[in-house]
Image 1 (cartoon, helix red, strand yellow):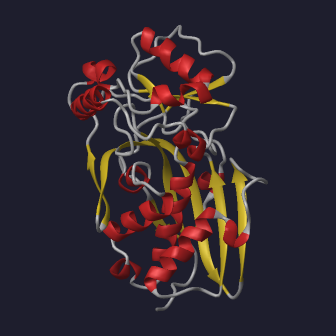
Image 2 (image 1 turned 135 degrees about the horizontal axis):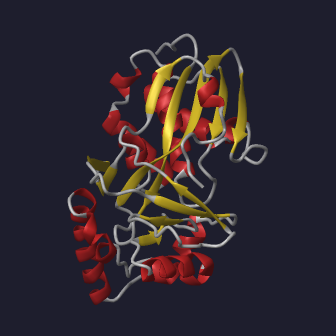
Length: 312
């Protein structure tokens, strides 16, 4: 294997997983992005971070983008002597918006792009499988890679996913709190079993949600009913549960974004709705393209740590 000369860059979107009843399966790519550039060097690992997580994230080989790059290089049969990375992060860390999946997808795609004919040794299907293995489940990495609304599942050979078009009337809004959450803590709150009736209801609503998101957004409120995970996690993030309940009482199809604590609204939020000062409210478009790779360093626009067009 040989490495390409010069830097490559990737733009990766934020994602929201589960979307209520689609636990570990459904995901949505959002128009909020991290930009990462990488280049092979003669030795050592250097990581520069601006924006979200600056001064907090681990450096060197412990940085998640680098970890993912190393895993992809192993698949490709080549490890460079050194790496230099520049990360401009806009996706909030540990808020349920797929920051770790974005880092993993960025690393896998950057490594592939830095190897000559890397796509031959790691095609898109293999990239999804590897990213899912690194993340532990495919519900966030699938929309990050593919864009749009995705349905993901895992077979013995690994993760697979399809991307579906979203109805034009779907306009997501996220409510992002100052506090952070951990996926491991949220998963620990889930019981080993659930009542059969709850499982059956949630399966039906997940199927309805596919129809609502792609063809009939008027059904989003009933389609986002969930009994598999959100109620069990409510005690660990009461402010999130209260905001979801308040939005749904106002007729808004609101759910916990991923493992939380961010709240995702899939239908229009009334103009006068007040979530309070503890929440940042962003109206985000759906990212239909997914992760995008290009040659060259980050430009002035990519280095801007503020998300263009984001409303608060």
